[in-house]
Structure formats: C-alpha cells, structure tokens
Image (tube, rainbow, N blue to C red; front, side, top):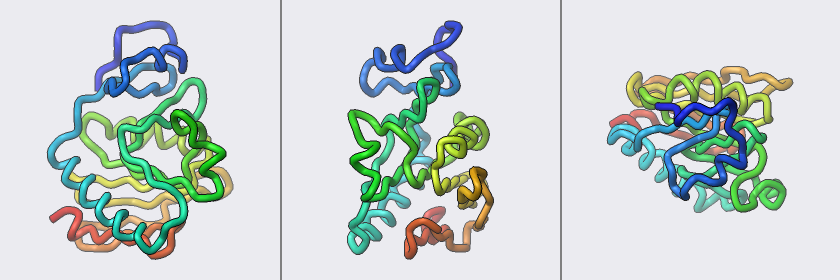
Length: 183
C-alpha cells in the first residue's frame, strides 16, 4: 500500500471528499491507498462469500456487507474490511450512509500489500472499538484464525490449516472448510 501525498493529519472530512470507489482507507489519520486485490485474494473472497450466502439462507438474521464498504470506527479510522456482519439488533444503530461503529464480525483476507495493516493497526482498532469476532484468512500460508473479544482484548480461539475447518464463534453453524477455500 502507498500513502497519499503527505499532510499532517487526514480527517473523516478529507476522506469524505474522495471520489466514490477511490482505493483508500483512513488508518490512524493517514490516507492509505491499496491496489485492487490479487487473483488469489479474489478467489478466496468469492469462496468465502459463497459459504456465507449458503449459510445465510438458513440464518436470515443480521446483514452481511462486502468490500468496498466504509466502516467508520472513529474520526481517525475509516476502513474497508473484506467482509463484515452486523447482527439484527444492531442494524439500525450503525447502518447509515456508511457503517458507523463496530460491526459484530469482520473477515480480512491478507494480501502482501495489506497484511501489516490487517494484522497490526486495523486489528488493534477493531479490538479497541469492540468488534466481537475477527477472522483473518491468509491465502499464501493457507491458514486462518478466529479472534474473539474477551474483556476488551482479542484472544486467539482457533487457528486452522488448509485441510481443517474454521468455525465462527459468533454465528453457530458458520463453518469454513479451508480445503475448499484454498483449493
């Protein structure tokens, strides 16, 4: 990822002036630009999305959103997670022109250009703002992790390799068969 032309601090107001679809996120007051996702990233994204779609047929509560979708966590951080879920009881609270507040579940698919942000800065902000479950999928290493928020801090609850299954804690029954995702 490249940062935009340097300014001391970018704000939510600066971010709002960007053209719709501009490949930026506001991360700790920096406008961070990323290239479009790689073919590998997109393949994994589509497979995960299909699993979610199939799961959602039976589990109709809440709402799923897919990148690009702005998630404003505070005035310094507006992210575009790959996939996010908001429970039914919180929909009206945080769904506005963009998502304003912490989704209940976020899935990030790592790419070489975004791994640092997803594993460090964004993870810390998701934790701080109360994202209950954070799933990180690594297509290159062919593994995935589930982090759950406990007492204000993320705890690694499951790490699964390419032949194993990963289970959401928040949504009972949502299972990702990694052998199919990484096939």
